[in-house]
Length: 119
Image (cartoon, rainbow, N blue to C red):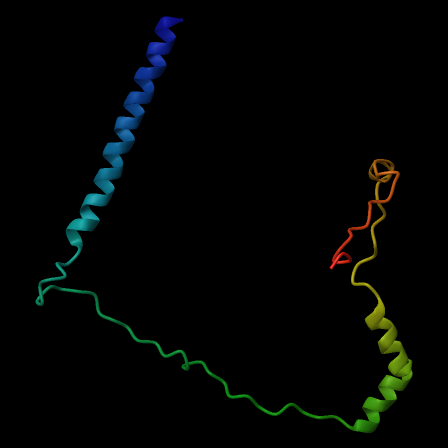
């Protein structure tokens, strides 16, 4: 059992050492390629400017249909009352509570807070 623990510890040490050496090897070259910010003659990548308005498309007027056709469409749908009825409907159907949570509800209603009645 002792030899297994020593083997695992040796494996973890070797793995940690290998990961640390490979991580430092990866970061070293990128730091070596960075130009000195204090050197005015340092070679830096070219800055590319792309305007935010390059692909801009101006807003155009939407085609407006006949108001008589719009009124006919609303009438066929049931008029303003149909739209009002739709607006009152919940977005998702109400979900019923599971039986376990309904039985765990307190049997007495909670006492009402007194509020500011004493002022």
